[in-house]
Image (cartoon, rainbow, N blue to C red; front, side, top):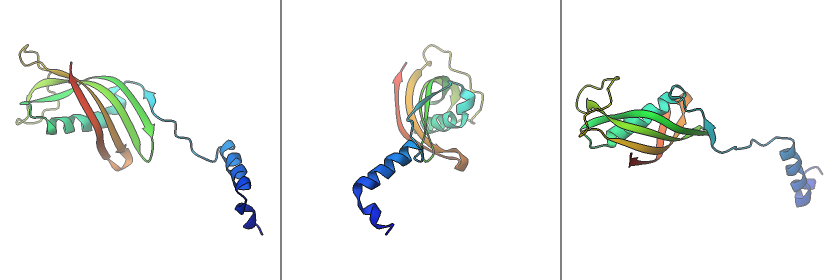
Length: 138
């Protein structure tokens, strides 16, 4: 007899509305602004710049010069939508990867881009995937 009452679509709709009002369904809030602290984004920014450098044909490596905007969204992992300024360094890509590569200051070699990217990550599994990336010369 209890099963028969769920056959009435109006009764089912009322139960769903009541459950939603009582907060039994998780709400997806969408992208939320995050503080533009590089410290909070280190692993995501590191993943992005490594991916960028691996795909680049430039003689020199680039590094994140400034974090301009970051937004995050919780899904099955964490999605970051980020805008950064990246700049060419003095370190050549075939050389040893030095963690402290200074930004290029020679006028002819200076080059910067403003990049927007979307990264999906499951941080507790150390999993990162670049979903979207576009860079324009600054």
